[in-house]
Length: 335
Image 1 (cartoon, rainbow, N blue to C red):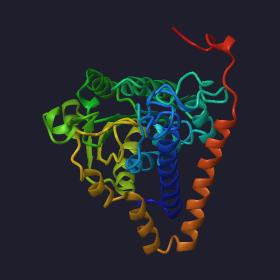
Image 2: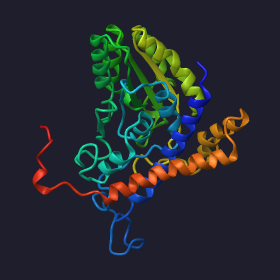
Image 3: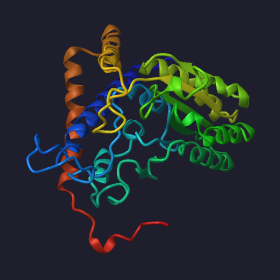
Image 4: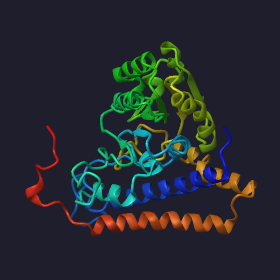
């Protein structure tokens, strides 16, 4: 399936928005957390600053989110990982409410009680979890619900290559294949499970090869390219909507930042990120759009400015929002 001009432009603008969001968050997150020699009177403390808790950013991995979500409709379900912002933005989760959640504000998706690893938006059918491999079982549940209701809705489970060695991966693929559930399992292979390279933890080069063990298609995307992802995912989406069962897709993608913000990344070759950035997928898609006459330099400027304005507005909304009242601390909390 070839992407329409409208889809290509949407993918480009969404990738720009995601990248600007992650880079903005990278700076905002450090407010109040920097060491004393940099920020007087303060020490690095993940509980300090306007955005408390850990932070995992997805700069560089934008093609996976837009290439998949460009096929989805509002009724489809997406379950993300602990690195969830790119999926959420591409699925249409409101930027202001998502950001307020990370700031711990009452206007957030979970009234400020979930934080960035527990974003939950039932209206746009998006959720994520801080537990590795936890996206696959809920996606099977959403797929089963759609099948029982007789709808052509699909569910997408995003996960990393490290999660592919968890029991939940195998259990979910087996169940989805057995019951022919409309689930698309998408492995974001950025080669690093926290600080462990894939070659040290996984016995095969391609996780997608494991699909044959469950009798389902295994699709490989070798490049971190939005258009390649879009075209590779299309048959899996169609298969799921037709009731023919799940597919497993693996995308080789690039993580530009640390596993978490503040990660010293001593485990990583010093020139790795600079080399990865030479293949940045955003200018690559911009060049494609211009070569096809779908975007001029002036239009590119408008798109970038528009995306940055949305991000700035979301952060301003989060900063200006109120914190939850102390007496509401135990409300909306399940145990």
